[in-house]
Structure formats: structure tokens, C-alpha cells
Length: 162
Image 1 (cartoon, rainbow, N blue to C red):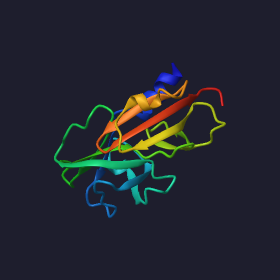
Image 2 (cartoon, rainbow, N blue to C red):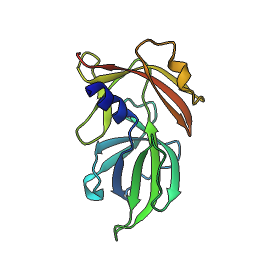
Image 3 (cartoon, one colour):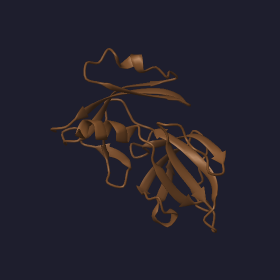
């Protein structure tokens, strides 16, 4: 059961909110590190980071005006104004590195983890430019997570015991 929860969490729909006046404005292709995360704007903090930064575990896939529903496997990040109305919605995908391990924090954030820890996922393959779950067929224990925008496929293995 834990494996299903971890796998679903990596590809899960999430919802964070932040005030749009934040100095770390984000655009499509930018990567982000979440210091904290919440459905309440005042309790969410992010930092725009270079996508090569290990802590930048999310990438902005799309940015749309208003309160927009992201696709099933995308993570919604809404930017709200001072009057608490949604100004724009960012749809995020994981920005994970091949041969690296990740944990799911209690607040829903994906963060780098130590591969020897239980309840981590290992990225055994990352393929940019392709949205094709069959790319993971070559790995016996890997689960696919594929995105259409931008096209990216992850093959991940769940480590339950450490």
C-alpha cells in the first residue's frame, strides 16, 4: 500500500497557493524549490532556482490566467492576489534527476532523499522529449510517469525497506 501512495504522490495532483506579489515570479520552463507548502498562500514559500539545482524538484509546465484545472498528473500552484482571488495557475511537473532518490514530505513536497532510507523513490530513467510509458518496460520493477507538456517520461522504483 505504501508503494502505491508513494508512486501516486510523485505523480499526484497537488495544490499549493502563494501571493502573486512574490519576488520569485515564475514562467514556463522555470524550476522551483518549495521551502514550505500549503493550500494557504501565507504558508507557502518558494524560490526560483536553476533547473540543475538538486532542490529544484518542480518545473513550470504551463502558466494560465485565472483558476484553471491542471491535467491529472500535474501539480497545481495558484498565484493569488491580495484579495485572495486566483490571478494565475501554474501547472508543475516533477524535476527529478536520473539515479537520484526522493521523499514525499508530509506537506506534499517532493524533496531529495537518501536512497538507503525507506519509503523513497529512485529515478532509474528520465527521458525528455518523449511522453511514452513503454520506455519503462525495460526495467523490471519500474513504474512509468509520463507527461505531455513538456514531454517527459520518468521510470521510478519504490524503495519500501531502505
